[in-house]
Image 1: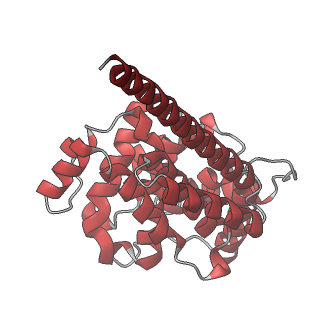
Image 2 (image 1 turned 180 degrees about the vertical axis):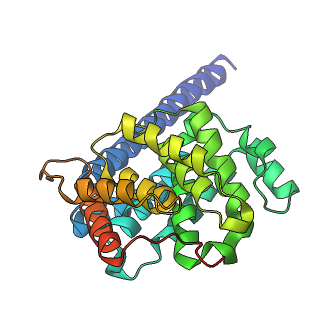
Length: 283
């Protein structure tokens, strides 16, 4: 009997050791995937490097299917891809939104409330999300906003409240995430509604200015502010000044936002060529 007990104890010790080793291996694999994906994401100005980053993140999702953080990184990567490489033909904003929503729905409290409201994201549901979900909130809102803008906001206006509450919650829990990314998301969400739905242009302007203050070298925020707020207000001189400032900004090869800043300059040049667009003239 004593020998049997001693054997059971040894077996238990071995199983515990094996379990610990397996967990350590999994932890090492997780860190390797995140480290490699993030290193490639930093080189996203090169589409090939960005796609390699996405492949690393996708492999991470296959290995760790319940990891919200990996879904958040995929939302960020696909949104960046759609913005920085728009002519590639991939519907990146829709994919970014899907991964972002999957990330958020992995939170049981949030997911339960959204399901109870037939898929609608309410303020009550958003308030269950904590700071550890800020990446998913910010990038889901940004991707969703740009997706709506591409398709025509009037036709997708049913989504506007969801986009807004996610951005607002991101600002509440961690406004300085990624140098003010939540403020940029909120500025878009507040400025996008068409005139009949009463956009909050003053608050949108404040949000964009907060984002610019936290990340003064990010040109996208200035272009968004000029396009979605200042142009609508008919402030031609200010609109021209900001866009010309963007166009004349020198871009360094080691700029961490190189891809986005190049795209922002392209957008500014196109807007200046087309002339002031108030969006709602004739409404």
